[in-house]
Every structure is written in structure tokens, then in C-alpha cells.
Image 1 (spheres, rainbow, N blue to C red):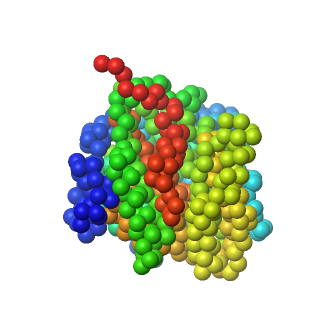
Image 2: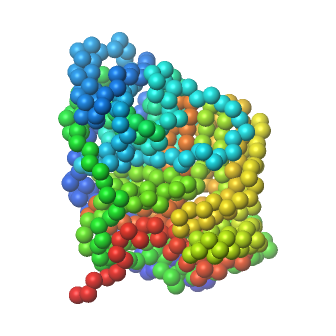
Image 3: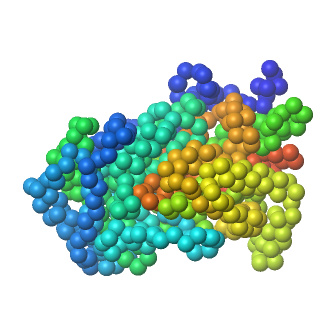
Amino acid sequence: MAAAAAGRFMDLDLRKGHLGSSPHPTSHSLHVFHQVVKRAQRYESCSLSMNGCQGDPKIPIGTIQTRTFPGVSTHSLALDTLSSAISHLKSDPPPFTSGILRLQVPIQQKIEAIDWLHAQQELLPRCFFSSRSQSSSFDPFIDSVNGDGNGLEDHDLVRVAGIGAAVFFRHIHPFSLDDWKSIKRFLSKKCPLIRAYGAIRFDPRANVSSEWRAFGSFYFVVPQVEFNELEGSSVLATTIAWDNALSWTWEKAIGALQATMCQVSSIVGKLRKEVCKTFVLSNSHVPSKASWNLAVNRALQIIGRADSPLIKVVLARSSRVVTTSHIDPIAWLACLQVEGQNAYQFFLQPPDAPAFIGNTPEQLFHRKRLCIHSEALAGTRARGGSKAQDLQIELDLLSSPKEDFEFSIVRESIQRKLEAICSTVWVEPKKAIRKLPRIQHLYAQLSGRLRSEDDEFDILSSLHPTPAVCGFPREEARLLIAETEMFDRGMFAGPVGWFGGGETEFAVGIRSALVEKGLGGLIYAGTGIVRGSNSSLEWEELELKISQFTKPIKVEVPLS
């Protein structure tokens, strides 16, 4: 008993309920977040909408449409066009008891989605998603991508920002097949830009702490007002969703949209991609360094036992940063964009909740029709200070037996899971280096061809969580995480992305933080523990991984 207790993240005042215990918030839930709901009143919530999870997933909705209006030269003119179109629609409702309708106006100039979102910063819920460039991806398939028939192709989409909820999907139970069907009910291949953006908890069976409660077990949203940043232009869009069976009629839906449109700013300025320098009042970790050492050593003892099936476990850390001045989560996200080469950026903030932001290099999967891509990412080294040093570090990473062992676990596990769902699977490259601004990883890309597009839910439930964020075998690693970690991961290391009609893409929500403007933030990071791991070196890896968050702010405590 004593040995087991010593291996837990035992900061005595920071303890967490475990699986099977009563679902109270974890007692370490940061006091800085206890006032989240009160402070969130500084934001303006958009009108309420319907929870699509409450509908019957077996009954299709009446209509799914996209209507495109002639292009205009400015964002302000696009806003006027949409407002006028909504007014006309109010007096001429469609003859359906349920449906979803997207109205979109091309803008003949490129405006960055992050700038547009910042201009609407008082409106909740809000979301942002930026895909990685796919230009360097190996693709053994040729698969056409159809637009919506209105001259706007979904493969031109660079970044998306949205406010309000035409329809949202949230529940406290684990994400299920019926929940997936409820989302897909509002989507169509004919309207590829109608998408549901959101995230799923890392472990839906774990107790939910107060800072994560508003997210539920999962949270997805089809934005009421959406800004699409394309390669050389932009699109402003609104979406109306209604379902009389959910007591959310066309009249209620269009009235709610008009209320949101009245709050949308027509002026979009350029956001400076930097966080104002500030003093850090406190910077604390759960677990502490001493508790981390005990937990890692205990994990190594379990891995080393002859009767233990555990080969790898990923242990994580939550770092609380409290500053003297406000940190705007959108400005923080903009800083991550600067570091965003070969990475996804995301932002998700439900009503009455902090913002979940991140800059993750790891793809969970990308499906386009029957084609699917996933990847293995493991093994970490810093970038070198010179080209020669960087190359030497790369060679060291490629030749490390410990890193190769950890990486092979991830790659082979993903490959087996894809082979169970796909008719054919390719792995190319099988082992390479992915370089990020501060870090480099071992990397492999896996591609396959699905037997049916309806296998998408199976893909998601099979791949998550990968050995890169949980461990191997999965269940043994998950149980050890649940009994070891003294904080709620929430959506950290969970799937983050979007569902579409013929295409879906999810990243893994690592390199992420939970932040409320004016309240500081919780920064999350994890590292894989395998035979040969060293707790001090793994701690240094955690510091390296959170550096993209801490660099933009002045990390020091001011003198009294």
C-alpha cells in the first residue's frame, strides 16, 4: 500500500476521485478556475439553439442546402448581403419541418480567420480550426473532391472560425454510435462546408472536474456565423438549423440567427501575433517534480515485472500559470500560429467555459470518401542551434533503440487497427523525421482504403486513444493513468477536429491549454514511459513541449 501510494501524483492537497467514485469535481480543480462561470459573464452568449443529440438519429432531416450569393469586395458588404437574405427568408420559410441551410458570400480579398474571430471576441460559443498543409503527404490514392456546386471547393479551405451554434451536440455520456449518427444527420456530401467542429474527452469514464464540465463528454458545434479563410480569398457564411421534433422551429432558428448577426462586428482589424509581456505570479505543476519521479519509477517497476503486460504508459502533467495581466486566449492562439508549421491549431469555447486551445503536430485521421490517412508520432528531441547540430540530434533520434522501440509500438498498433477496417493499408514513410520549430519527432504515415464510409465511427473509436497518448496495451495503460494522475485531462490528448459529409479530419489534442481571459491557464503535456526511460529526462521533455506556450509571456515572478 505504501509503495503504491508513493507512486501516485501525491501533492497532498491535490487529489482526484477515481473511476467508480462519486462524480464530484477533483479537489485540485484550480481555484483560479472556480470563478470561470462568473468571469465568463464578460462574454456575450449568442442565442440558444438545439442539442442535436436529443433528436432521433434514424430519422433524416428534411433538407440540407447551401446557397451561394454573388461575391463582394469587403467583409462589411458580405455581412449586409447575408442580413438581407435572412430577412427575406424569414418571410418565405422552406416547406420542411426540419433542415439545415447554409448561406455563403465569397469575399474578393483574403482575411485571416483568426483576425475575424478576434473581432467577435465577446460572442460565445466560438471555435477555430486550421488544418496542416497536405502538400507533402504521401497519397497512394486518387480520389476526387467535389465542391458544393457553387464554385467554392472545400479543398481550398485553409482555416475556419465560427461563433454561435446553429446546432450543437453535447452529452455527459461517452460519445456513441447514435451520437455520431445524430451529427451526420445534419451533414451531406452535397454541402461539404457544413461541418461540425469540436472535441471528445481523452477518457469519458473518468470523473469530470469543474473546469471541464461545460464541455461534457464531447462537444461539437455547427457555427451560426462562420468565416472561411481560403487560399486567396474568404467566405462569410451563416447556417440555420431547425427541427420541430426538438421544439426548435424555423421561426426560432432564424430569430436566433438574426440576434447573433446584430452582434457581429463588420470591422476586422489585424491582430498582432504576440501576447503582451506580463509577469507570472505563479507557475506550478501537478504533479510536482518529486511526485513525478515517484510516479515514473513506479510505472517502470510495473513495466519491468515479468507478469505485467504493460509495455508503455503515457503520463501527463498540468501546469498552472497565473499572470498579473489578462492573457487573451485568441492572442495566445495567434502566437501558436506563428509556431504552427506542420501542425494543427484549434480553439473551442462553449458557453460559460474557458477556451481549449492548442497547436498539435499529431493527426489522428483524415478521411476523404473511402480514403483514410493516419500517422504515428513518437520520440522527441529539441531542435539544434545550428544546422550541423540539428542534423546530429536528428541522427541520434533515428538511431536511439529506446526511441525506436517506443515509436514502433505506436506505428504497429495503428497499422493493425487500420488493417481491421481497411481493404488495403500502406505505410510510407515507415520511419522519418518531422521537424517543428522547437521539436523533432519520429514519424510514419499510414494510408488505407475503407470498405465503407459508414466505418468512420469505428475508425474513431478504434484509433483513439493511440499508444502515443495513452500507452500499450491500451486498457492496462488507461487504468494506470486513471489511478496515477491527480488531475482531469479533459479534452487534452482527445480527438479534436470536425465531421463533414464526405470528409472528416481529427487531430490529437496535445500541446494544448485551457485558458480563460483574465484568469491564466492550464498547460498540458505528456511523455511516453517505456523500459529505459529516465524521470528527469522525461520532465525536461515536458518543459520542452510547453515552451511554445510559455515563451510568449514573461515567465518570472515580480518583486514585491
